[in-house]
Length: 193
Figure 1 (cartoon, rainbow, N blue to C red):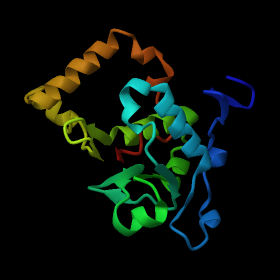
Figure 2 (cartoon, rainbow, N blue to C red):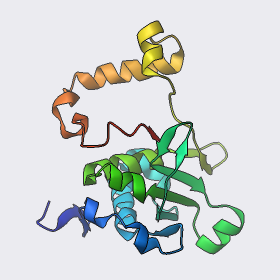
Figure 3 (cartoon, rainbow, N blue to C red):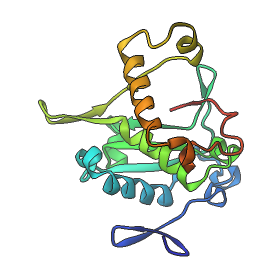
């Protein structure tokens, strides 16, 4: 890390702070604006996690800020990955578009680390099938409720896998790392990505 940013391969990536999140006024009458700092972070994550994201190295991905993230199923939507097909693909000249909700990130006072985690999450939605050689969107590895785990335990395979992985992570004392520390406002925002 340097004083101004984080070393990204041979380039330096600026650390993203709450001051870099565009205000509603910066959007004007547009719903989306380009996010060059988030794009740089996205490329840094692809390089940093080369094994997991090797299928994305030469894929055209556009990263945008969205003025209002909205909600889905009662939870705030922090970001979304979409395949750029049809007219969107033609005009954007990319394969996938990732947007990040400026309003929710501002409200939760997102840190650079949280932006990394969110973009990592969104990149995980882009999968590669070696059999047909195609990229596609992938759903989450698991879905469940804390109350469901409390009442019935890990009763299905996806929940068992998630619990097993969480238990293995605790062996590395994740609770002592910055990743496990709650940030102001974040815990109050149940997220949907």
